Image (cartoon, rainbow, N blue to C red; front, side, top):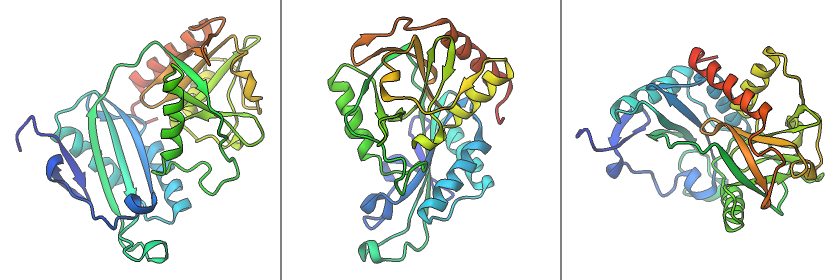
Length: 283
């Protein structure tokens, strides 16, 4: 395979991306029945691989899919990164239901595992966000699952971008702050760090979880109590967390700058997280 030709991993086999094929009856393609994980690779090694695998297993259980073993999950990423000669990368592992030519009533049969990797893009120091008018359903069947059914997030991101923002923020059906389309959210009020609880319907983000652990290890208290949706716009400072963003400051909400767009607590947490990553590849 030519060194410049990208490739993907499909059920244990590496193939050139241009030649890779998925059945038109595939359940993820037809009805969005699939789960996935996106990881950041540093120096050719996926970060927090075990935690991501555990979350994928939980998502597969919600969707009734067979998950990969940890060995399959790890080997797929290692092989994909190596074949694409990538060091700093965005790696995605997807579990799809099998073929369903008979529609929703079909048995999924054998599923499909895929792994892709592309170069990581630099993250801006801060991001503008927009609240979207559609709530997350914290009691929905897919609440907490990382599903490939991402159309809701695509619509929300389009709304945010049309309003000059780079991330969309959801409330839930109780008008509580929930999460970003592809991130978790933290905010500072009166010197105290807050983040919505998992009961808000937000995804149990791996970076969120590690940020909480890092903060508490360094004596930074974090509240996980419900917050009104309006709390973000009124925050002193705030930030987003995700595998690719790591810890990224929020500059403005709905076009209004926060009083401290890149505040001192945000800078401290971001620095502590980077230090943690440099010494813990699979925490």
